[in-house]
Length: 238
Image 1 (tube, rainbow, N blue to C red):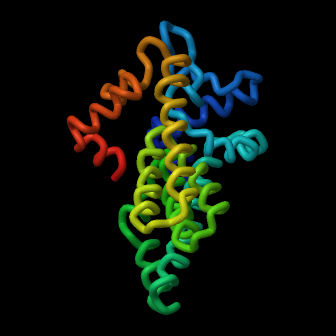
Image 2: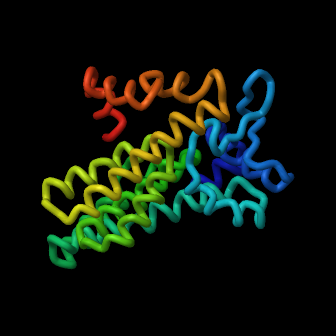
């Protein structure tokens, strides 16, 4: 359905936003996007708009096939393969038949099915990577958990807020310190790098903190905002 709409020129603005920087790489320009400009000049989409290095996995396939349809294929694959960690998570608590039923229910959720008839956005990778991170967290496989947590952080700049729930749960479960400190430090440093360095550097002065995250002016300001208005933290995490 998604490919059909694409080939009849469906109006998907986000798909063009993700395609243009990939095309710029094929022309020798590192993720420059002429769809986003600063004072009339193109910006670096990878670090000046949304920060999502995980989507680089699509780049080799885009360079081979040279079509935006690659993004739609990856979107469907991500949502389909998400059934695997969902099944494995269910299997930790339920029998095989019950786990299969719940997995099928996930695949038939209207909001999930509808994604196949819409455009592409990197947050679709969260349907696969976050359940996988949860599975390895639950099975206490630290190396695999950290790998998928880093991939989750690379989906979009605000996903690390959600990843900060892992060290909280690990602390409540009284796990070894590496389960608490490592994901907490990595996610906090990631957030500081993105919001306090990359966005101001690659898109001044109208950077992403002003446009989409006006409550983030500094690290201390971020903490105070969440204390003063915890609703903002809840909205970003959930």
